Amino acid sequence: MNTPIRLTAYGLGLVAVFAATLGVGRLVGPEETAAPAPHPTHAAEPEESGPALPGGLQVAEAGYRLAPLTTTLATSGAEPFRFRILGPDGAPVTDYVKNHDKDLHLIVVRRDLSGYRHLHPTRDAEGTWSVPLTVTAPGSYRVFADFRPAALDRGLTLGLDVPVPGEYRSAPLPEPSRTATVDDYTVTLTGDLAAGTSSMLGVSVSRDGRPVTDLQPYLGAYGHLVALREGDLAYLHVHPDGEPGDGRTAPGPEVAFHVEAPSDGAYRLFLDFRHEDEVRTAEFTMTAGPQPPAVPSTSPEVSPSEHGEPGHGHG
Image (cartoon, rainbow, N blue to C red; front, side, top):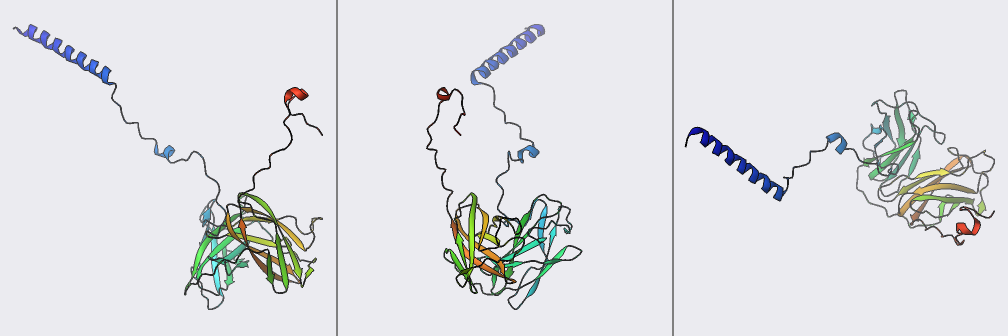
């Protein structure tokens, strides 16, 4: 066979092989290929943010950080506790908006919710806060800084643990009770905590069985309430209902508060009140239950045909 005939036969053979391969491909289907990897920037972005955490569970939030300069405390006597609030630029914050008459509130409590202290540190020109702190038992203490920076449109509560060396013996959480006694005062608690919503709680202060009707303003109210969740010590959002001088809030014996409990469980409540120029603290244990279901309406539904147009009601 001459050369042109050989090339022609070879070319026809290649065409046949290609056609056969194409036919098999149509029967089997196209080969699957791996999808390209997503762009790392988009892959790391969540579709939406989750619910906000309760206060006090984080050492940093919104670019602000609680930075301790004192890392341990002792039971031998008052020790200065020093710290700074660092802003988004890393520098100490020196400009605050007053909240409850103070630039910053410092709450200290042991992890078993004993040894509660509500303090008001002083700040120097460089932004360092300091306060004498007395603790009486070893253990891990949670320190909460409650404040609002002038550059932020809301308040923050940041928290961290500070150890006190020594043999730690946990104290059991007191049983729930509606009454607390401090000195010769009795404080009675009314209302209930419902998880996931705002609850109205009331306290009534009496002394030797007589209602106290001349409470003195303390931190812009006739009482200051702090509520902490057992376990993680979440810091609850609490604010008083009314304030001195508003024309409707009496100076006792009752003081009302709005409290938001994020979940079921046990909570410890600390009420600071001022009378005869002395601040005292009453302590309670409460259990938050599930939010009560909405009561269905008992009014019969009215169809549009009965009154001519939807939404019609009787005044």
